Length: 355
Image 1 (cartoon, rainbow, N blue to C red):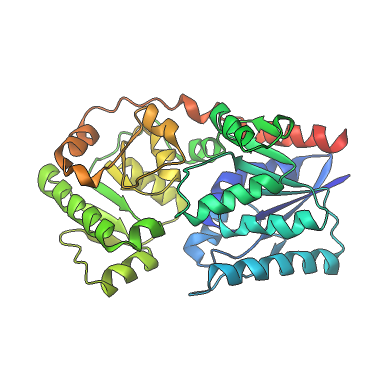
Image 2 (cartoon, rainbow, N blue to C red):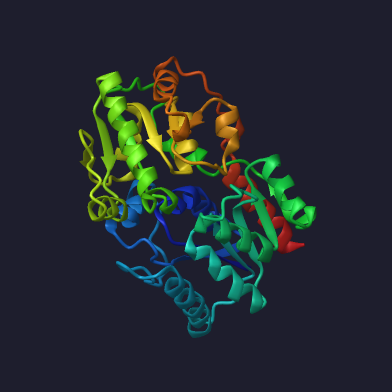
């Protein structure tokens, strides 16, 4: 019997890992130990998603998150706490599995140095914008991983160009498809009653000019469409707005939501303005266009398949973006995969760990 440990820490990763957790729990060839790093510690950013997605409680919660704790403190604590946990509980993993690019994946470095095998889901993703802390995290995790699970062939080629052996890389599709299809009613015709604004990336909220541009654009959207803009109240973003005296104008702040509620809220959106990576994927499956206020994206497939469009604030051509987002949706979501990603990953692990 093999032992597979999953280490997960933030809201989107709980969602993306949900079906993998279940399949590992059901597998007859391995024991699955689920560790929550506690990077997201608010109820709306962790516990409620276990309820919405019917995920069992983690075996351990390392509790590394707290208000104002620096990223480097989280990372240093995490490496120590994971290894101490293994020693205390006599856990001997045959594989430790991470997903994504949060601070939690950097635990892969000390664990690999201790001789553990590492798997990384969402590998090969690149924006080539190192202002993003996530870009650094995902590169580091890729290069210490024994097995890389990538969403697309394009991501595989990016990893190979960085010198990662092709033998380590497996194209499996996107893990977001399965949980979303379990939650969303694809036959539901949304109310199109509002525009959703979701801004939480530091390259936006820590740049006064960019935040002013985003707020100005959102208010133009209100004027041109007659739809209210409802902005998710991420504390770091709103704190920056307050500190720098950026007036939201007619934008309404709304609270964070559980996953089921949020999917319905997206479906009721006229369109979405978001710097979230996941927001270039989920809306594609429910036919909602997305405008992306970023200079680079690690999901170019979303642009190429007409699911989203990048906003160039230097152009000041706001109307063309609004017209695109307001027109009949014509995106293609085939690039997200066939909805069998979790099964593919678990089957590959079974084969590799039992060779």
